[in-house]
Amino acid sequence: MPHRSIPGARGRVRPLSLLSDPVLHAPCREVTGFGPQLSELVEDLFATMYAARGVGLAANQVGESLRVFVYDCPDDEDVRHLGHVVNPRLVETGGVVVRGPEGCLSLPGLEAGTERHDEAVVEGFTVTGEPVTVHGTGFFARCLQHECDHLDGGLYLDHLTGWRRRRLLGQVAKAPWNRDQAGGGESGS
Ligand SMILES: [Zn+2]
Image (cartoon, rainbow, N blue to C red):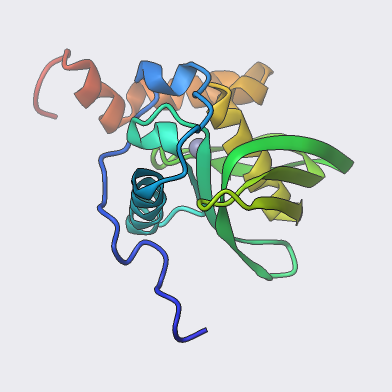
């Protein structure tokens, strides 16, 4: 499709919201206006996701409490899935529950084995208001569930229990981006 522009090419790379930001912990608002501002947000999400080398990004991860996410994500067969969903609803999950490595651009550099369904179906709209249905399996199904969680104010951390959760929280406490954000502690070393 040479006549189509590359997603994110016109977008602006925005600062990422990190774990302690309240915008990540509250449900996002439904999108009601399908105008140029929404297209701009989707472009910014792509630009920011690519700059951070992510496979998915939700709008609240760039500080916008709106129900939108973008993705460019392989499945387990290495098929690439590229797109965006406005006002997504996770309408179906199925298949086996698989624990696999999962990370998040709002907890940079960290990951943990997280349980997800192997199949997921998301319904929503495109940036121009056309209905869209996205089917995912494997790693892409994981991505769809992860991004839907974000828009409800959730994180993959919420799915962890026991030592996996304790270990990740310990890594968060020691992460440079977390210390910087807290603004406390001693400088140096
Ligand atoms: Zn995430």
